[in-house]
Amino acid sequence: MVASGFVSVLSWTMLLSPLLAAAAILLFGIHRRRLSATLAIVGLLVSFCCATLLFLRVLQGSLVLPVETAVQWVALPDLQIRFGILLDQLSLLMSLVVTGVGSAIFLYSVGYMAGDTAFSRYFGMLSFFVFSMLTIVLSNNWVELFIGWELVGFSSYMLIGHWYAKPAAAEAGKKAFMVNRVADFAFLIFFRVGLDEQVR
Image 1 (cartoon, rainbow, N blue to C red):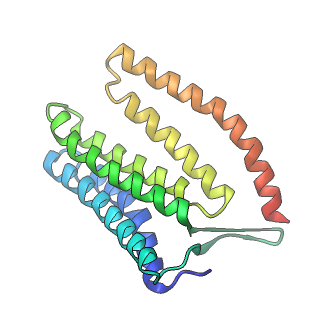
Image 2: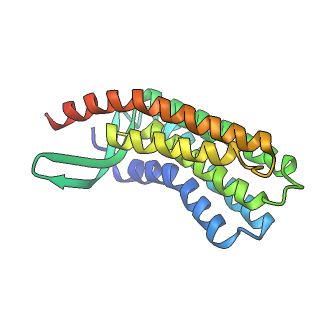
């Protein structure tokens, strides 16, 4: 089922709000600690509110799942790929988990990272990580799912290796990167199968 205008706006806002927060932090708030934390928290709370509103509409019966909203991304004679959002019971539940638990983590991180010299960079990458997770959860095709998977791997590497000056943190980041590359191989097998089915 195609999403209505209001549901479509809520869905896209839920997905893109953390990305916009990450971009704003890295472009404008990288040296402003309070601004970066505020942007990150507000961005994620907006996503959480959108997920909650969608969930309430489902409970009220005014929204029947699944619904999909998408835009054309690749248009070739033998390959059509749309970048979009698929909302069903599982993806909506996971969106609530990611944004709800994420909001608590963001709020806790304000105090936990208070003395860190790279405070703003941390919140920028944390917002980007949440966007990557939501891309996986809400993806409507294998290509988008794979993009989200790779973005999660990148942001995980950046967060795990946040204190890169410490040998243990740098080594942990490298290990995480290598494990993700091994997992990529298995993912690509399923990705190939899914892409073949999509082309058919």
